[in-house]
Length: 341
Ligand code: UDP
Ligand code: MG
Image (cartoon, rainbow, N blue to C red; front, side, top):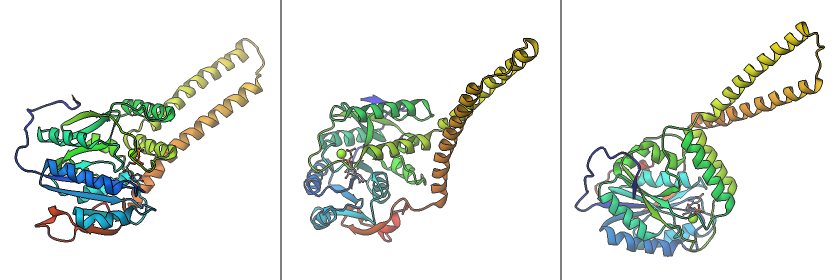
């Protein structure tokens, strides 16, 4: 285990009984979701007697919704069904909005996140950590492109902002209620969860785990979707790309000024004729290229600002079945808890 935040005080272990919320985002997982939820329930039972399982059906187009709905009374599930596919980040946000436990576990439905590691994570939370995240020890199962892409991404993220996003840590994690409340206060629409977890801080620890192969079905994350997520991460947590345009512009301006001066000196004092149409064409094209790139970067940020200003909800719920045992004493409809809707 490696602590990534400075330990300012002694860890205060959390003794006594506690309640646990498990949040499971699902998108087209009909083959494995039932088996997974039973396994998850068995694991949660080992940890505590007070737990709830929140399944967020993120606009599945297969039978996932029907399968979970049929299981809900028997397994005491809570099922949030989105009106369409809003993406995993939105699904996790909805699960966190509704979760009532003292600690919350986020876990994928495809058995890639080992349940034994989840037990270790909850134990680390009981030992006093506020945020316990899984760190994948090998990316061997992934394509070269995906591995290189994520390495470049984490490099970029590491140098471009004040927060530290631990590499190879994903959404598989356990969080204390305080962390969940902090995350719920963040209103942004473009939710790059890995960045938000790091932004809120708190006493964190990583637990290594080996990613398993998918138990069935296929991944929902195409290369394009990963690229778009990476772009969200960079623009949401760094203004570096905006500055790069300015810096390049300044360097070129200084260079052009000196060069222009030299041409004047050449003409007046050395008597050489002004020439070089090719140089002129090349430099004009070069500047045009840089300007367009800078405008593109600007547009990327502006588009995101536009999305935030429109303030559309992060997700829309079409249906909610709530069999959670952690509801007692709650006033009002559980829908009111879904604050990002
Ligand atoms: N998922 C989701 N919405 C999406 C895509 C994925 O809720 O739009 C869920 C999916 O059902 C799974 C988890 O997020 O439980 C991780 O997705 P996946 O296994 O496809 O991604 P990978 O593990 O390949 O990164
Ligand atoms: Mg997966």
